[in-house]
Length: 431
Image (tube, rainbow, N blue to C red):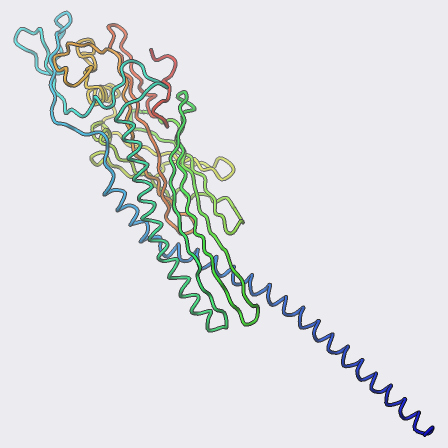
């Protein structure tokens, strides 16, 4: 028996060593397996999220043509100007000192009266008696701005809907491909929003600016199941936005000059960066019945699409673009005559005889409204390309005119009458 004790002890030690070896080896394998699995987990989810961002950007670029056509089709089929031409209008006024007003119309036989006629419009909706700066208001401009912003938003919703269809199709196709590699993707929600907001502030002729913000956001929420990495809810978004700002324009003999500031950014899941607008891919379309009435400007019945003729990089991603509506009549005084005739229904060469009408119903000039202010919306639509996607924005431009026909005190607001807000104040030397 005693001779067997060393054998028993040796067996026990051998078993202990074997158990220890197995335990140690198993522990190492388990530890190594856990660490490796966690690394594969992180790597795979990161790869999937990057792919989703890439899929969204690719789908937006692919949908650009169709979505932009949908936006423009809805916008132009819906937009109606608040300036409505109402046919011819005639007025007869008493001459002062038997002046010859043949340039304004046909004289009567006794040469004591002068008759002139115009193509009229709903002038009474836009007039503000006197010099109206920050106190300017009218039913016409209020309706114009409300209509303009509503149609921009409606067109943006059409645009977002068309983009959403393509984004959804791209993600579905990608999910089917990934399913072949052991990854199941289920879309919980896909949201595409596109908003255009137009704001402005009153001020003097230097600080009265309007700003339009265009913001596109694509948000997706997906449930992902991987045979290697398990389950994860993935929330991903892409945001593209830019602002267009207009403060004050300028008349010149050869046209109407419009300086526009543009800033843009792209945000990919919180990684936000400035995007520099390409002037060569940017255009400005303006429409207004009043532009058509200002016949010295070279437009297509009040509609014109412009490319920038000059561009400057300011700072912090801001680009300044200069647009110009060309003039086909470059004589300054001829331009003034047309402005007076078409905006306040007066006559520049017979200003003492033909004051702005108090109302178009007062065709006999019995009420002399010697000072009057009118303001009109020139509806702007900015189009540019950001990261392969055509995006739109509004641009609020106000044509504001002040006419003063007091005897021996003939003044008007030219050339300071293009502003970002209808309540902009005129330069101080205007009386």
